[in-house]
Image (cartoon, rainbow, N blue to C red; front, side):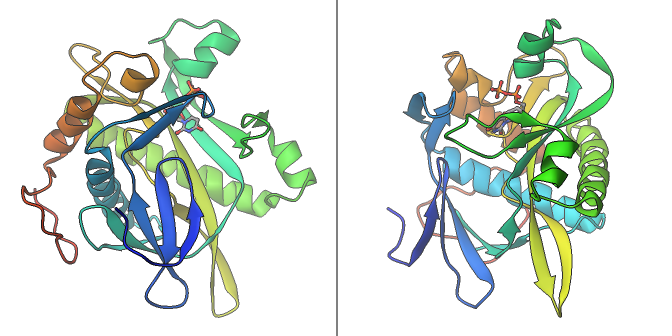
Length: 255
Ligand code: UDP
């Protein structure tokens, strides 16, 4: 059970608690999984622990190359300390290979490489089922400015290039993924940083050799062996969590 702290927000796969200092939050990763806008619900045991580790690892690697993120440090098996940001209500999807909604919408066979990476925007709204929107909608309705979108697009493509290489190095094809960004104020200055998570919940990851799915599509499509797939991603990245019930204090990358 999550510890008793002031709960700021509870989402489908994570809970946000008040952090130890102003401007910080604690992100708690649950084992709960949902798909098709909450119509399918389930539990993937151990998922929260793996996602906490995987997202930590990827955010730290991205920070290493200069991508600003909300991540501060991992606190224990299921929690990480992050900077409190104002989430921009847009899901940014980057695609390299056709799968999921683009295959359905445009009739492109799943697995077809796209002529170039494609960035799409979706408005975050459970009530509306996260509708796809264009830059025009985003700027006209004031969800982000044209300058914000320039920054977001540049970061998304940089993250894509980096993660593509990182994943290929461990025999995984990065088919597509979803990012969220937030506004962070420091001394009257606003900058946009990567927020939320990068995990097999938010990416499509296929084995390079066999095209086996190593992501949430196993849950969406009732393919079984979901936890094993997440574990395999963590194993290949060299970050399987230590055994044992005790919480681990502070960041500790095992490679
Ligand atoms: N995605 C996500 N959250 C969402 C919608 C999509 O993390 O609410 C991720 C999804 O896991 C995939 C990518 O974004 O890696 C593209 O998803 P798509 O538009 O194909 O939609 P889906 O098939 O997930 O409905």
